[in-house]
Image (cartoon, rainbow, N blue to C red):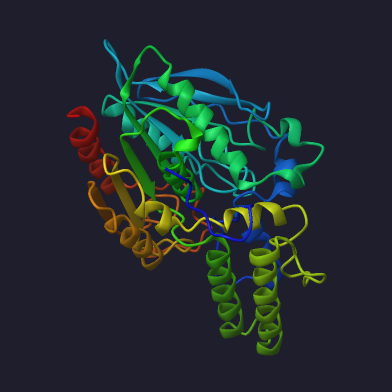
Length: 387
């Protein structure tokens, strides 16, 4: 099956921008940039950070390394469930945007987010192995060959890294190669879709996908929606004159049009928007935007079962956005899809209760979604263990 990309260019875009309600414009854009999918300049700064040391209470972690076609050596953790006596189902965990490490943490977002570690715990408790890894620019992986030219990083780099991780996972003697799942969080959801749909990648057969608060619209469309919402919030809070907001929105429209059609930024970018839109990440943004997640989902093979979840308190990817992805999945001629709405849960899959989310709570020690744990347990029992 051929890859499904938008016509007109050959680069990619960004999904995970953190929206925080009542901050000055400079602080707002700084937070957006810190969480953006692959802002290469930020990745360079974070590459020197040491990854946290975490001892899991469920199963055993084994340090692994694998080398991608671009020569980058990626470091990760293979989690094996306790008391494994025969090959078991296995899941590749793909992180969201930014320099996100194998635990699901990023130096740009303080505290212990731990999304991938919590997912590894959940799968191990259900007798399923998993592989999670330090993305390019994070943890032990660093920037490798991209240190000299981080502007050369495009979206396909991350797809190729995930593909190599899936090959490593399938080669483990404890893993059943006929029962492989890829679970992607946020931007990782799009990577999971591409892995399952693009036959040119030559990856082991994928039987199931987990798409958790996934990137569900074109990358630049999501960024436009997020920045627009934040500018309006700043105006309503009296922190930004409407005239300035209108001028920034006009510039945003010009930036998106230029990136989408020409693959480059316009000659002038307002300083307020430069942390998101700059020469270091224009290639990535252009490339990522060529994928429409709903279109990719519509041509998934029918033998790939899908679990897709949005969260009611997600300030980055709304349930309305995810509805577009679900509509794409519904266009398949056949194939199992389980669609879920996680209640009182934020973008990083933690329970926020009645407090809601503004992004500042991502690193707080809040419970990982118990609803998600239960639903993943049932989905993997029916779609992996009974396969």
